[in-house]
Length: 286
Ligand SMILES: [Zn+2]
View: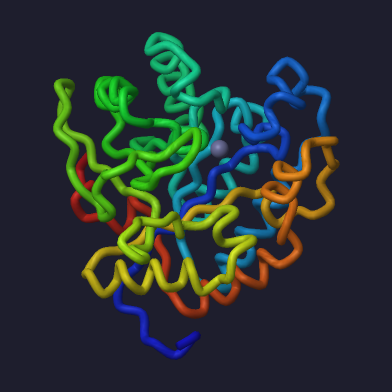
């Protein structure tokens, strides 16, 4: 199976650019007012990924936290110069479920401006921290349309504690909102024993057998759709400082980090990847 099938569909590779200490699961031990005191690791990790992607001829979309972009403008420019797309991951990496519409509007407006100034192309895409646009917080989609965004990649059609958009469509689709139309690119899933299970990247890629994500992308391809993969810079950085967190959080955050780069290389060998901006013709002119 591996590495021999000629690629037909270009899948969407996405990286959520954030620091190791901004992860929602670590928030109780690393609140925003302490961020400035932690060691920054994001540039080295992103540069390692840019090199691997250049070697593989892969493009992707980098959903970047505005707070990080402000502090690492040269890194953002390097991402753009390599041909990748810059898109928004909020300014402060707070979950949609934990903020007001007014705060969210300011966050996505500010981040769009920061990224456009640095990247030199329109910032039209968004992903919520921890896929936190859930049932009942669709107001966020209206805010995105009103603020000039053309697409979202936050609606994870799975049932999970704390996030997930259960019953949502699994392939790319249009969402009609009072404020207008938005294209949605859901993270990849796999239909397994009558259930929709998450298989798009992150911990599912880092900890579970890599065949899970491969199977989800291959299944999307067989339906004639690209799949959406995601990963974070801290996921291949085993040297990051360790916080004294509970066992389950520790496993979810730190397990498998040493093997991610090899898994990415294998993924790049089997599948072709591009950005939403370059690979989704329905976004043309938006
Ligand atoms: Zn994030």
